[in-house]
Length: 229
Image (cartoon, rainbow, N blue to C red; front, side):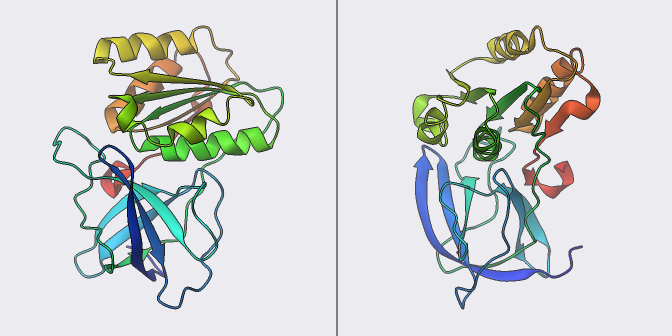
């Protein structure tokens, strides 16, 4: 259960990439919403009675004080763990919980490796933006089925002057595992690992990272059903 739910309405919706959409949320009075750090996410409750809720990433590049923009996946693919099963149409009412910001280690002597899958790219883009704003170098690996399904690809590419950004398209499970393993090998024990995406993807990253870094240095940004958080 959540206390202090804030009522919002869906004011706009547009496509971010193939099968992915941005959904804008505002209060009816268009009042200012609680501030959040880049990379944050919110829990959205579609029905306050039956408590149907999911966690969505906040889009730091398009949100503003009077409007949150979240990234959602909406298609018919049953295998996608983050696929949306909550109706989000313009004019719908919903309730949100105060944004939750992930911990980001801002230490010039620390290396950061970021991994994004699917809609998790929205959260990872925010974390990369925070690292870039602090003048810290990073390495980012973004995975998508195709260039057309890559969320925030242009925004991530704009950070290439601050860190190394790699896009990986159309890889099968074995090649994803090989690619992520190579990205972490070798990694110093103090390296910070950030990941966001489908649960199986994050499980893979965490399992590999535990062979290189301290467990406390592995940061999962969990999205989707709250039972996975």
